[in-house]
Image (cartoon, rainbow, N blue to C red; front, side, top):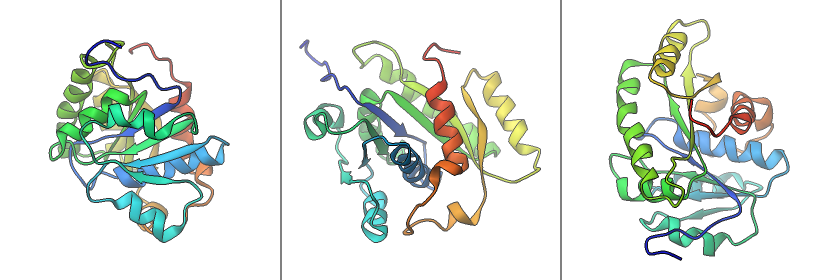
Length: 220
């Protein structure tokens, strides 16, 4: 193994990333991991945020899939030894990029897929530049020299609001992959923390996972 290289893992690693807190990262991580579990995959959730929200949610709601805490800056090196061959997917709930860049960059070094949850609002759109740069920068630290497959997921959308299409088009014009589906501003999601998650595959998160997995790896 060359100096600075990362151990090769056979499973897929999906990171949920954004610049700030309060951007639906934990909710997205929770529902996405349950979608994959419901589809028959062996799923591990990694809580890489020092706040430990995913860990507390799992403990409160008794999830049918395991969650471990790994809020460390060398996660890309430690994860293969922790996971072994026991899982098909690892879903990583990351801390805010602006607060814990070292942790997030380590996660990006290990990630095969990235979902960026973003609300259709000017301030959320402006923050995407920092996220894009971090993902692009991670390519230089990876063995393949390529960034992970990344897609934006519009969240907290309002039915019939023009803002969803406006900001979707803006991101597409910027060259982003943007998932066609969107996650509405619904009580099911906003009040879900601490509750059991059932039927995740039938929600917008199920559509998002299916679309993400059907995407080509080639850059848009």
